[in-house]
Length: 95
Image (spheres, rainbow, N blue to C red):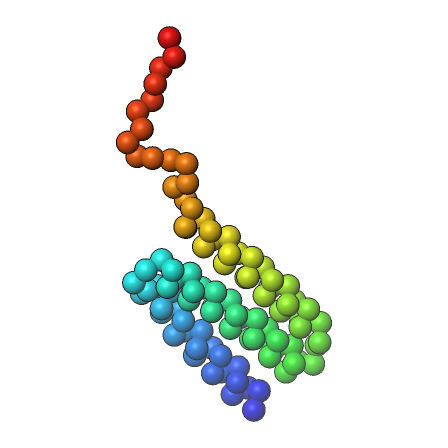
């Protein structure tokens, strides 16, 4: 049963990876990478359960936290990348 869930998770990860490459906008790609990270957390937890190692759940939770923070950071960077910069500003030389 859990092997089937792991296989289905891998298929879903492949579909999300395709969306990350093909996505029409940068926000679609960010969402696809976030979803890929979430599926990675699920896969790590499933592998830990199948292998009988409950410490993998701790690793999965840390990876989920890193995935969440990285998604917020990348989204803010994409949204505010041009903050404070304008393209038509001429430099003024002080004499």
